[in-house]
Length: 245
Ligand code: UDP
Image (cartoon, rainbow, N blue to C red; front, side, top):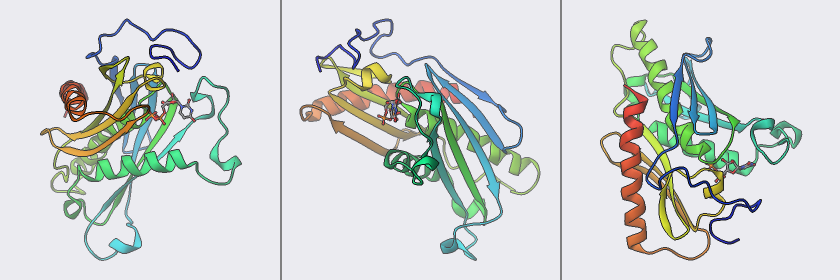
C-alpha cells in the first residue's frame, strides 16, 4: 500500500500535527458497581476500563501475603468499522490478539503496584473496547491505570489498606513512522499504513515498562528509534498530566 493512503484508499487525516495527541478524556466513575470505572475517550477509540477487587489470589500466591493484578481485554461486536465482529464465545476460544493485548495490559499494570503492600487480593482490570480507531491497547493500559488508582483509593478510604500500594503511575502511547516521518499516537488510518509501529509503556518517572516495536515494511535504524522514543516520551508527559493523580 502507498504511504499516505489507508486500506480504503482515502488520504490520511492532516488535521493533527505529527507531534500532537488525539483529544484524550477520562470519565471517572462511569459505571457504579466496580471499585474503579473509567471510560477513556482517546480520539475515536473508546474503552471502558473497570477495576474489580476480590479477596483471592492465583494458587501460586496463596499464603504469600502478596496480591495480583491481571487484565482482560475484548472488542465489542460493533466496535469496528469493518462489519460486526463475532464475540469470542462463538468460536469457543479467545482470539490470539486479545490474549496478547490483555497480557500486555496485565504486565504493564503490575509494574505500577507493590504486591506485598496490596496483600492477598486480586484486582482485575477489564478493558472493553466500545469503539476502535487504533491504539486500543495503549488506551486500555492508560485507562486501566486510572481505574486501578480509583479502586486503590477506595481500599484506602474504607480502611482495607493502610497505604496505597501504587509505586508509580503507568501509561502508554503508540508512535510510528508514517510517510517517512515520526508520528505520535497512531489512529487506525496511520496504524494501517505505518512503516514502523512502536507501543511505549512508561512510568510517570520516565522509565520504560515495555516497548513493542515492529518494522512493517523495511527495518528501522537506531536514529529512527531514538526519534520515536523522544516523541513517545513527550506525549506521555502530557498524558500523565491528563490522567490526574
Ligand atoms: N482492528 C479492527 N478489528 C480487529 C483488530 C483491529 O478493527 O479485529 C482495528 C482497530 O481500529 C484497532 C486497529 O485495527 O484499534 C489496530 O489494531 P492493533 O492490533 O494494532 O491494536 P491497537 O492499535 O488497537 O492496540
